[in-house]
Image (cartoon, rainbow, N blue to C red; front, side):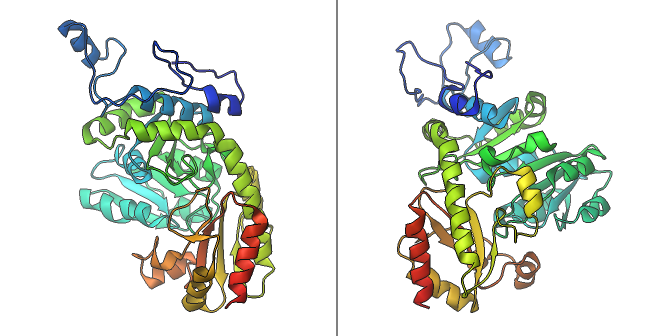
Length: 394
């Protein structure tokens, strides 16, 4: 497949990884097939032994899926990538493919609820211990690392409180014992932050979010070196089967053509909304990496090009006031999804992080009045007016 590494990112996002059929189509082809034929039995034998290139079964690989993977690798600056059926399939595979009973996982505690389940609940069922630390505290990472730590995992910025973690420093700690650092980069996106350049070994995405960007279908991606994927991930995916459908991969592939343009406009809108919220009397606090008031603003701007499209904020008056405000919104819709062209708002304490205890949510700074806003691509003035009107109805 074509690898135009000499091109700049926006060009690669349009042309990267493209392979055309004999028909010379301009739009990438969608190969909706489960299997493939071989000229001879000897050819099938060679294909299964990886002695000749080609596809065997779409649970393993598929031409459309492979185009998406190659274009993602070009965008991320990774040697290789594998797509999965969802973001959580990507996270689970990236972690579990490289651990076994007796190993240890070290993770930041500020995680999406399902990611925390994998680290805190699922892995220990198989004899894999885990430790959660305050990701902002480098001394906590150093104190918790063990000789048998095999995976270090973090989100930065985190969901939903937008904690920013020093990726380079944590990578150094992980590598001191030979562990691999896996970074969930979904909030920052591959446009605004490059974890591999900061020392991470593996990067994961829910492609459902900004990569699709229009709320249409599920998908995930794991990116790393070719050797790590060949040695750890490829066979895990082949045997467990969390494969993305060619149709979903095709949707993601086409969306990559505009992801740079969309993400930057998302971030510009989000910063304007965050600045408006920060000055409003009915808002207790605003968390947005692009604001100087963010506790890790300097680190965020060192690691990220822009602040991203997620804004977290506390409505004065707790859950009742937060619900009343969200219910009064007209343009902004209530949904637990994010990274969509439409602006979406959710209440983490009762949705994405509801399975945590009240004490655990308090430790993470998830208050009853906190809302997570994924700022979309609408006219930003319409968003500000919608927010202002909803707060005024309180």
